[in-house]
Image (cartoon, rainbow, N blue to C red; front, side):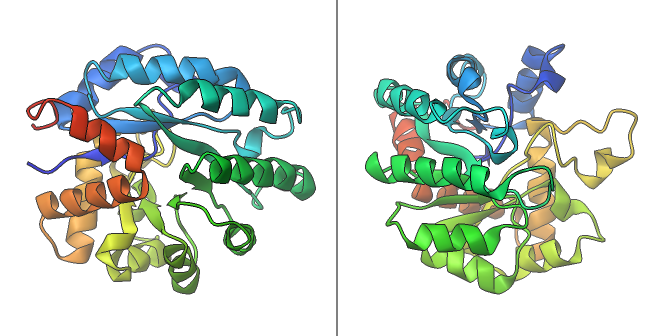
Length: 280
């Protein structure tokens, strides 16, 4: 059976506080084998780690990354980079720790200072390079600036999450050993550019994600509580399969294979699990 992996899920978000365990169990029952939980600020490093281990009781392939999100840089201190370094060093022996993220640049929100963002982004890229770890990138309206920063460092690759750039920008990410994340936005008929990318990009360049609780798919967008969940991933994958004219199982297999290729520690974790623990 094909692995079903959610490469971006904020399982620690407060939107899940009232029913987190139920949501985790729903995802497992829907066939999700594991999620990647990216930290977004230094104060969450330990809680994200604990949550990944807890969720793994239901979804054995669950992993986490550590990083400072650009949206949280206004509250971050420069000393948080030292905290991140220490957390990475302490987590290297944990097979569920797989990289640095969520990091990046956000040029959509005008209140975010570009220079302050850049300090944290570049410092975290340097840590990823030092420890030879892949990165999970936030690339909202900042693809070119991020590609420029990546080209000055030789990184092991990673994921450009919630990709919504041009085909040329996607090609530049691919040359740097990155894959692009597609999720709920792709399910909306009006998201023409994202759907074109999902259809036309090489199969080896795409991974699946939910970004839960954010970016709900079209079937949730107009509900009373449009909260995304990792359990929506199988249906999101069916939309990607339809767009690409492929089988759902094959689509899930290719996307999961891509994720494990660019995040080697995730691949190592799954290889260490009992053979029947990640099949549905």
